[in-house]
Every structure is written in C-alpha cells, then in structure tokens.
Length: 295
Image 1 (cartoon, rainbow, N blue to C red):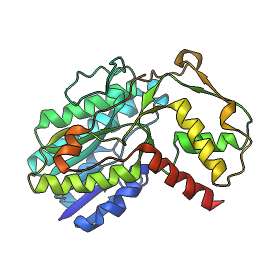
Image 2: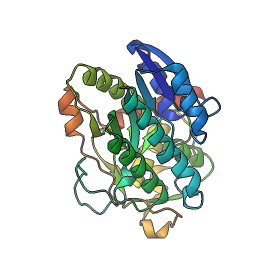
Image 3: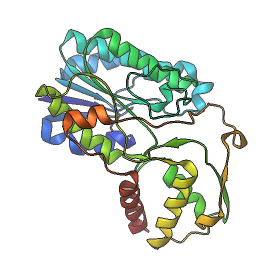
Image 4: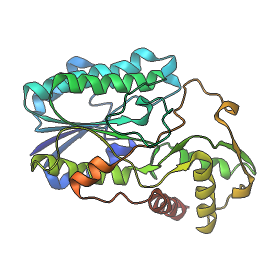
C-alpha cells in the first residue's frame, strides 16, 4: 500500500510518520516539497506518486493571522483540499484529512456531535469548513477527523508556551470560560492508523469523525495543571499555579473569535473501532516529562 503524507513537519505530521509506517510505503512531504498553494506542483506530485491513501496533515493554522491573510488560508485549507478530493475521487484513493472544533460557533451547551450544524466564526474556521465541504461534495473515499487543542513536545502549542512564559513570569492571566479537551498528537496519529485499517476492513464507514482525548477542561485549568506537573518534574519555573488568575474571554481580546465550547463527542469513532480515548491528563503528563527530561 502506497501512502502519501502531506505536512510531515507539523505536530501531527511528525507523529504520523511513526504510526503510518506499518501500513505500507510512506512518502512524506513538507511545505518545501509540496506547497499546497501551488496547485500544479501538488497535482504533479500526486500523479508521480500514485498514492492509494493520501493523509493530509498540512494546514494553515495561524488562527489570528488568517483574519488578514484570508487568501492564503483558503488556498491551503480549502482550494488545495478540493484538489486532493477531486484526485481521490477520480483515482479511487482514500483521503484522510484533519479539521477542527472551529467549524462550530461554540454556543452549544453539550459536546458537539458530527451531525450538528456548523457555524464558524473566524476566517480560519470558515476555511476549514470549506475544506470539509469540498471533500464531502466530491464524494471521494474519506476520513475527516475533527480535533481540538492539539499539543505535543514538538512545535508550537499552548502547553509549551505556558511553560516558557512560566520561566519568565511570576504571575499570569488565562482565559477560564472556554472548554475543550487537550488532544495529544500521539493519540491523533495512533487512532488515524487504526481508522485506516478499520476503513479498509469495512469496520468504519467514511465521513466525518470527532477525535479528541477523554475528559474536558478550560485553558486556565490546563495552565495550572501543566505548571504544577512541571514543578513536580523538576522544571525551574518562576510561576506557581496559584498565581495563574482566571479571566473571561472578553478580557483577552484577539483578532479571531474562539468557540467557548470546543467539546467534541467522540462516541461514533470510539465505538466503531472499539477504542478507548484516554483522559487528556495522561498525555499532558507524558509530554511534560519529556520536556523536563530535555533540560
């Protein structure tokens, strides 16, 4: 089986290079080798590699920058995805793609189902939803995974930013009225491999699935937890958990609107694959231990 991985240098892409290897021959490309803003080059790569499976972990993820960089956000998150979907449909290829909680407005009180109406409030969210629609409209074989609050020991993410700032500051204000499940790239990549196998064995139907860790928290609670665990693992920090103050979203305005409810119900995927999605704390603990062991 021939797999083409796009976005190999991103948080998810790096981990996918590990989990996809047992499935077949993996050709992995980053932005320098596969620019999603260059349709001709992207199509040429597809024709050259002739993949049985395309795993698209590439995306425009600069949420705030997208508000003034709409053309690039749509080029990568929607137009390139449409090209991938059309190729997948024509060549009977499976397209695996990643989407986001930002396709919802965050107003629902309970966790979102895959079938809930979307209503993105930011350019980033709208561009990701446009990518989803392009795939579904193509009617290609697809697995679309919506995830949220992604983190790892690599790249840029909330946990690494908090721990970096905690080395410099002795107090901090963090938003406390946005809810979600921090999701480690390790879980995303592991489940992706299981899902591909399940799809090929007709255990999992194509379509959109929610993929996050178990449990829920707020950004404020996550920051407190991460700082406490880092202290316990010996990281030298100025900041203590009790000096992280909770604030409302309105007190920390940003260019792009964030959904206050980012909780995604994962039962459909978990039940289809007979999997258990562990609590987010397990993965946060592991990432913090890895970060502490680097020092």
